[in-house]
Image (tube, rainbow over all chains, first blue to last red; front, side, top):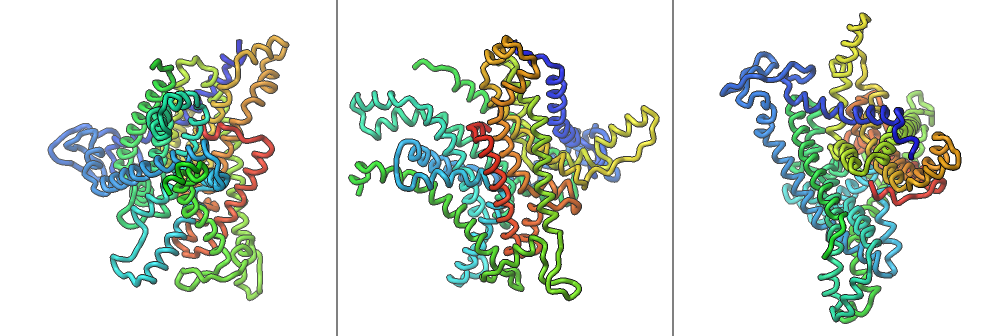
Length: 299
Length: 307
């Protein structure tokens, strides 16, 4: 019997920490229904619906969407939609590339010996041990120096000049995502039973067939969780994007940050709430996938 | 060529690892070298970089200004040293508070019924995956003069019959500390949980059988075995707190300037990439030194990947 199991201290501390974790989120969601446009104090819910928005000073009295006024407002905001589009397209591209090259290098590091190996392995730890801002200003310097040089060398002018944008953000995202994919897949490979592959070879399969029919299917859960991790890291990233984005490549975190320095309406809260809901369902889906994967399978 | 590739295992390995290695080389290692080179440079009048070799940026960072107000050739200005020291102490305080909050929670989850564990963990993952910027914003709303905390305190004070003046909490060092603790708490809970969960229940029974009281059993069995998780969590918290600039930017206003804010401003407002690069390298060196000694003393667990 574990003596600490029912310790009141642990239970009280746990409850307090959970409250600390959730109070800000609950407050954020509550204020997304705020009738006050100024969003400083909570002025109650928007109760009436009408075919047009009725304002009384900074107070929304009635709206076609009723209590969900700010969500409708959000859906009409072109900047948000553009930022969401950018965020997703960057995350998709970067995830596909980093999953492919990250899995390749995991296999190389786990299964092969080559001269470059110690260096390849060491490079993976760099994004973990250096602060993100160091990497952010590093890539910013790289791009600005390189683009400046290239623009001069090729005498580019106007729109043809190379500048920061979707491309630089995506390329930099891949740099910090790849190590996570590689480390996750490597961990999966470490716990691998090689006898399946040996059996396939004994039964006459060549190396490529063995890889395609045996190794890859067994590796797939690791690859998928690496890809999911990479995808969420990209969606969530602020620092690297902050230093590498340019006109037209604003992502959602950058957009919200920009709003915080100007006037904040409950629309920001509505955006945050939608975002939190998406996170909620995504995490739930991942957990269900993982628990299914953890159960023993009989093939 | 293809035949050679099929036979040569070393070549295959190199080929497979090459894209990643090259990518990291171009986008991590070259930028670090560029930062180093530029940090020895000089700012040109238009905000560009003049490549030369001078230690001026580092000398300035450690307090010696070369252009002084009263005509002296060199004078001491502790501004930047103060910023470095503030960042270091904030990272230290945040880490200590985060450990003391994360440990009981991780302990609770690890000792909970296996079927309930996933639910409790899920409740940690939601704040973790909620965007960083959104979480700072949530605290901005709570800490404001008209925010929820002051409303609650006001109600309680009113109820007790005490006069209440709303507290100025936003734009203070305390607000930045709370924000940092909130942002990085989940990063400590997960690794500690991972290491606690591995501890075999029979060890507790053995300790109890041998006559150890609960506190002694905790100090001699649980705590030492969970140290890898604490170490991994510390790395995951300490390093990012040192470099984060959003929390201090939004919750600290112009009052709390950390090294992250200093670097960001040099690149975007002041347009002095050379000084910003020097500050960035000092930041990197400081975190590497702390991480190195810390991991050498306590070891480096696989828990870091678990989070």
